Image (cartoon, rainbow, N blue to C red; front, side, top):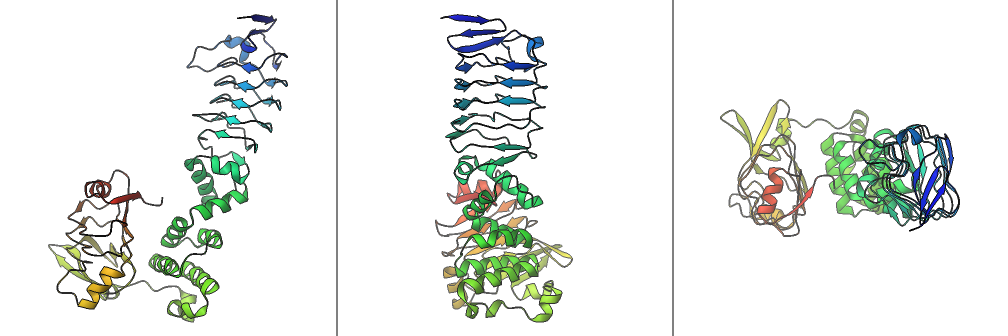
Length: 413
């Protein structure tokens, strides 16, 4: 192993291992190919290669052509570092390489860079970096440890390489604030990729603003739009319903819209809140021992929302065989509908108990959404193996699904 001393720098086999100078502006010498782990680090939790008094006041780093790799934690915790100049020869920046460089800003990554971090973001906790442009040459990108202030500019190809959590957080920032923290094309890609989940979510939440952002990026089937409209009507937001009706009209023509058209008065005033009497036309509701309970289902809708609160009463339980296609006191035609056409059921948050054989022989069911509030599930009955049970991770719902060998997914995924 050959060691070169260049006054302030110690270089071993083309690897810069230590810095012993005291300059505020540091120019890495020629001949170096790699900057070693912790070389300039002032991190409090590691054995750093260079004395803290040599690195703690560094403000500028100039890295010359010829350097290929900056290893992990190489410049971590240089709190006064403001500027870094990268060469076009650079191929790899290791994990946490510039972590907690709180004064660092105006970072320009070179075209030709192939790997940025690995297990942890190279620029995590750099609070003054407001914009980071990722070059199209990148092949590997670490989980970003999303930072709310940082704008991530990159092509759609690079955006696809970001972790799911990073994509979600950049998109959620846009949905929450309307502020873009990445390219508009990446939000379009995200909306297309997650179209069904987002439309269902915003329709159910009555979020017309974000629903209008997402709708142009898909062409859902007629039955899917009907499902979305049912969710929007359940939210009570007339604007969401009208957006979806307009989408149906645009994609499939006005003949499909008639059953969803609102009269002029409702459009101006908004959807009327459903009363207890309205719900009694759809469900059998009884009161026993001070508790309200749904005991039967009377309507024939493909998508059903089971309420928790109606006016001033709370529904805490759903009884046995409410949607069962084998329930003997249901008419034959109603049982046939439940078996062949009931597709999606949502139980509202607040319901605590589900009875036995609720969906027995409902073989058309695609989705059952059960809230975290449910504490007891008797049994869902015999349903299709293609049906997905949606709930909260770690909940009684997930435990039931696993025990019953049913497909489970976390809500809003």
